[in-house]
Image (cartoon, rainbow, N blue to C red; front, side):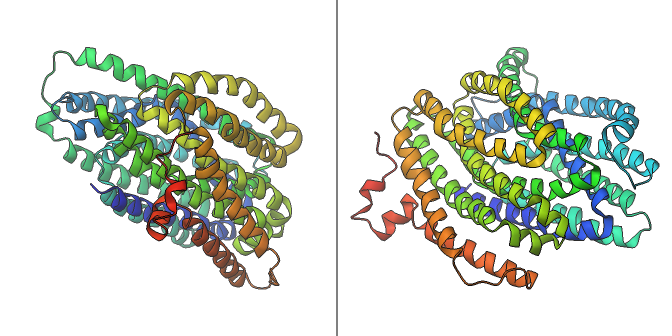
Length: 508
């Protein structure tokens, strides 16, 4: 499978996912109202927090599927492992639905502060959320198997259809039915069932029944390292979820549902920024994992890691800096809601910059992941959680979204400035200074300079939403084009005689 083809397919799918999610926001606000849109924001938080219960199975399955694809003779036990875990997926989903239903009345009446929506509608909506979230949560391991086998072009084709139904299809549904809130969540349930059927069928096709039915006497022995690594990944995911999402969870309690709807706009943008880095990761991580199975693959894996860092920085820096610098005209064009623009412009700037930096820092986890060793990550982020979780709760309670925004930006700058050095010292010794300056900061400085110069353009903002979006698109595209010229592979082609100073294989 081609990394380039998978990366392109992943980016097409992810860009469409992000843009569709952004484009429907004003339509949701218009047809649902700000308070009901707060329910949509809570649904997103519920999906994120359910990942805590994944127990690391999804990420570990992707790793094992990639190893099985690279060397089926050595990892012949993978189909039997996948079969055993599939049964666990079904049972855990049923248990989760029962527990969620029992908690639904308390969530609807005691956690969410709905002041205008009918109480019965909120309760039913939360109950439907629970079922939908459980289905989507248990679908993710099957998605991971497909990614591990590098069938990412097919996966993105399915995603395009599902995302269209989930977003634009939902807009149509809430216009057709008299109760838009309940019809929205019922539609999400129907689409999630269809998605699950597609992904489960495809994963079973990749791991055929004959292979899954083969007995392996040493399966229990094989399960031990799998469970050990899965629990490490699960703990890492749990810590990261607490650190990165506790602010949104607390704000859903402390803010009225209508105000939380305004914050959900910012959260959607921040999440979109991070998601736009995932296609590169999705294409690269299985390949890096396969490379690491070969004894001579360390140097090749390290080179691929640095190329990936540059690629992520090239996409993230222009995007997050442009959003941060032009947050007010962007929010006005996006929502045309004065409350959102007034309350959330500066908050969006903070979250946009923090999310852009976080996308770079996410590579540090993947570097440890492909090496099959998450001990450093677990120790480091356990310490961070002890400090950052209480700080996020305190900031959310006392300073609201602006306080959590400052903290989000600050913690990610710390990861880039300090944590990266520790990770590279252990897993990629000798590259940190060059990685930080050449692969990251150079691109960010250039992107910031271009965005700053563009702020002096004599543009009359907030006259027409489409002109706003057009100008922002032009500024972002110019910035992205300039940053693309800084990638080592591009420089080698443009300036082969002078590109030696930018060679990613150089060590400090």
